Amino acid sequence: MSIKIDKEVLEKFTCYTPLKAPEGMKKEEQMKLFYRMKLIREFDTTVKDLWMENKIYGLAHSYVAAEAIAVGTCFALKPDDAITSTHRGHGHVIAKGGDVKKMMAELFGKYEGYNHGKGGSMHIADVPHGMLGATGIVGSGMPLAVGSALAADRLGTGNVTICFHGDGGTNQGVWHESINMAAAWNLPVIFVLENNQMAIGTELKSVSKEVELYKRAAGYGIPGVQVDGFNVFAVYKAVKKAVDRARNGEGPSLIEAKFLRLLGHFVADDQWYRDLKAVEPFWKLDPISRMKDYLLENKIAAAKEIERVEKDITKEILDAVNYAANECTEPSVETLYDNIYADGEIIK
Ligand SMILES: Cc1ncc(C[n+]2csc(CCOP(=O)(O)OP(=O)(O)O)c2C)c(N)n1
Image 1 (cartoon, rainbow, N blue to C red):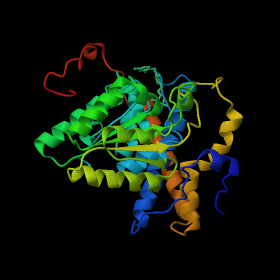
Image 2: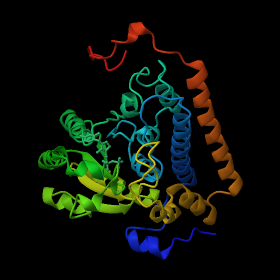
Image 3: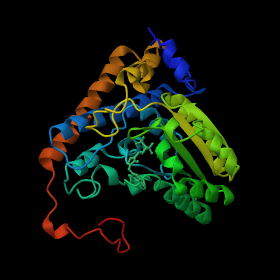
């Protein structure tokens, strides 16, 4: 039985589109999309619990509710393509094929983590997988993505770069400068705007008169589209089109994936600033429940098959926690000053 979405939600969320796989997308591919989204969900739900139990260090921002965006986007990429991230980077790393054990070890502050335990959630980078790095500075991924696209263009690699960023970043000067430069130089970069309509406790509509952010693309002479950011297929289709365009030398695009942040800004945010009753009905748009429902309803997968995938994911995350907590080592004092300067290498 498909999920019924309240009229009140549909009236407020006008970019809603029902799930429909692209023509010819195989079952294994659809299951992979589900698996990746669910893995992100389980990872971030576990991170929240661990943070509350004081078992991990530093701040963590959950990617819950945004899973369709990273997964749909990265599914349109080749392994050599690059992405830049934000302070909410766990979903981006997993979607780009990163290692959950190394991520968990990083959050536990262990040497085996992506940054040898010194970066934490907001600095995870996985350059071999094309993930150029998370960053705590809002908007700062924009020029990095443009630089990466410039390198691909000059070296003729044929690779594209995706720049994930939030609506809060769109009123930073660097957002405009980066898009303008990418457009002027016709670079192979796609700006994927994760519009969750909030920047911590600030609603988008209170800081932007025009809230349909994709329209800004016209000001730079590039294509801009808006998609249902809770719909993994819709995101994939829009990004694939933009990626093909960029690879073909036709330059950048802006894709606004609109959704709503369903949880707090960071793991321990009690959200005193908004009416949580108004948020509750939007859980019906949850990208993962909708995808599960779609797979079952269209007989793409049987309930047992999905249960097996879910069990495997739970085990994968438990193994990652066990690895990070019990098998990894604390960084030694001698390594304190390592990796501050690149010294010709990205990481030792
Ligand atoms: C340059 C800068 N200004 C302010 C902050 C504080 N800050 C951290 S996250 C955030 C909100 C970002 O909102 P958005 O870009 O929409 O991303 P979201 O958290 O909603 O995913 C702000 C203002 C910061 N980290 N960097």
